[in-house]
Image (cartoon, rainbow, N blue to C red):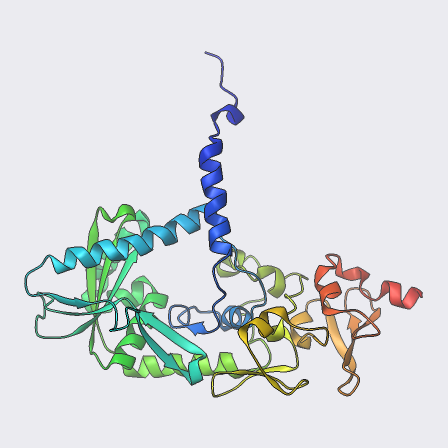
Length: 347
């Protein structure tokens, strides 16, 4: 039998669905805060890049579908839990919003799936409720962690990021127990684990968030090896280990500062920055010098005239990020960073 060419097997309708899913995710509003759901990640530099909007978030069709499955799975699991006599589950406040918690002026936030009473293992104790929809391999690993470490220590060993969420929600609600339900794709199989409060760990995570939010330079790299497994799949790898420049916006600008009251302030224009201000930036944008450290180092600057001079460490040439030199947009858009400074010095 003759082989059917691969391109004849493609379904343009399904491909159009994939494209629409990716477009839809790309149009979602940018998160303005560092989330409880992320702070458990091991690399503080990655979290700082994210908080500073150093790169646009990108999604594959598969990741968009996984997120969609997770949202729908959460609703389905909530309905299933409410089928159990004696269970009281609250997933939204009186205004119809998810329960939200705020720290560090609002720069650090989290949104809890729910609060549950009547779990048969401890029916008189309120638990933070969280639901996760994961792939089959990760699903099986949770049961393996329960068998190896015991139920109360399973979450910490299974997923440090989810564990961080759990202890933070317990800290901010005052509840002492966390009940995680976990389902395979489509919600066909379900498992669970309960976790005790850990106030010391929650406090450590708040301190970690504070350091990330209020530092004006990226934290140390988790490793200098771009082949390290966490770096290979990191969305900021090209900034951290290669020579890409970050997006020009207020959060990557040397003039902008996050304040303790939850706002961002432009020190050059002496104004509080709205979200739209931050996204758009302005012509006075000058990169935080440490963001360019893979291809340039600062050698001089003028605060009054608003320029920063750099030595291109790839070529030895000098260039200026300023009105009489290169705009931040030009630095970002120049893919071959060896060209930075070449034209200025040739002229």
